[in-house]
Image 1 (cartoon, each protein chain N blue to C red):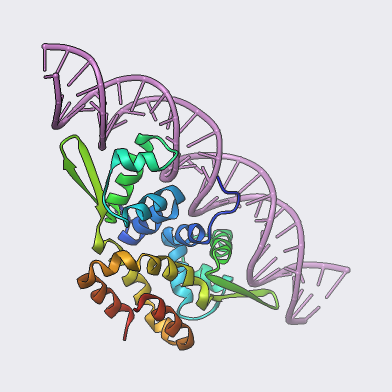
Image 2 (image 1 turned 90 degrees about the vertical axis):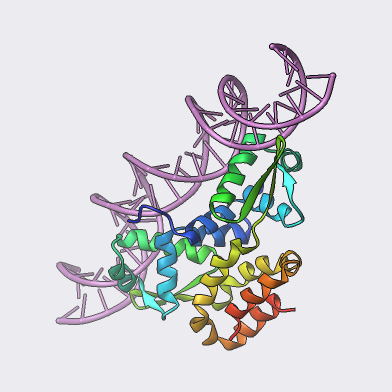
Length: 109
Length: 109
DNA sequence: ACGTTAAATAAGCGAGTACTTATTGATTGT
DNA sequence: ACAATCAATAAGTACTCGCTTATTTAACGT
């Protein structure tokens, strides 16, 4: 129905694959080159590159070229649309206040 | 590699489809029977039932039979694993404090 | 009991996904 | 220039997904 997929579509889809989510999670521990990321998992280098491309298209990571290596890192603003989406239903959640409090505790300090 | 998919897998996957997310969003406005949900969208009743099954398997909605109708509603605790997953990388987000504050504002009042 | 309505299930189809191996592109060191 | 290293792209394949129509199961009203 729409030519371009919504941002939420890409984010949810990107994070729905275990390998891809594992790659993303490993990047939260610090930026890394494709070579190093590949070494951490049992999939081939092209597979890693493809996952990184998907994550990048979803706005979750950035690529920075340094010589022949490309370092990928988490884009801090990347998950904003996801948080926004959850927050958009704050109306619903506030109707279940007892739950909301618990949820907020987890994101709060 | 694992026989049973992780909860996060199912949640992210369930929400990655626009139709399915639309169905879920419509349920945040209140419980509804399959028939009524079907009327809201341009897809067939079996398609709706299949989406609901996916959402239910992800723990996002509940089905309650009443006569020959089945009413579906949002499971308030359903998104907890998703919040947990985000919170799990609070360590990363707190290293980007300027961002975290903004994110929290959206979930806060 | 009968026909009707509501929902789930079955089967099948086209499109998309996640991988692989092979190749190409880009940068480096000698 | 040349060989080596790192990453992206190409092409192919098995599997999954989201939809459809057809059928089945369940509960109703008369």
